Image 1 (cartoon, rainbow over the protein chains, first blue to last red):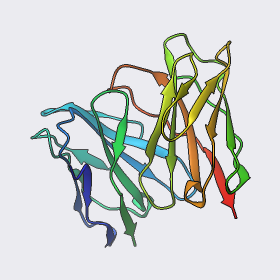
Image 2: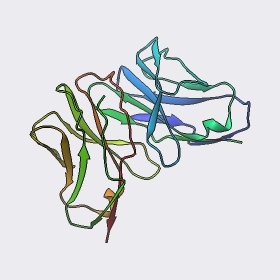
Image 3: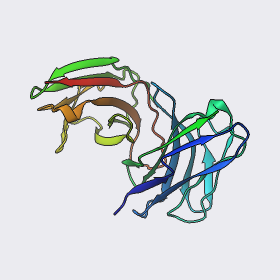
Length: 110
Length: 112
């Protein structure tokens, strides 16, 4: 199993640009999550999904959108990038008590 | 979810046991204690969790006090690769939909 994969690993955006962060898991987990981590801080939940077609907001959803058309994929969309969205983004999935995290996407907005 | 308090940093000599404390004085009866760690620039990694009994797996041991208001994660023989930020998280168990709330964690530095 590849586990949780994320692409791209790094990205630099200009203010106002849009992009989609990709996340995929091959463990057949129903639950998937998106977190962001600012420098020196803990992770904060952006959005989560309990299954295909079902998503909900987390602690810091503003400026982001998600979709969940399949069990495997959970993309995160930034529509109008802002400097405040400079962060490392982690995707995770879970079936029971344990969350499995991807390697992260480091995003810089200039 | 109950809040947790951890020391911001700790040092440990390589080969010695690392004991990482966590206070969770407002923990509820149905809340579990989870430990994750994050090695530099990587995604967090699950270590162990427990409700009230002590737990042990191939990575670590978890000691929970009888009143459940505090716990200690023990890495029995710390190696340089155990250098990481360790997060103690309290949340209701048995439901994958319950989100993890990460605080500041403890930055463990294992030294040669």
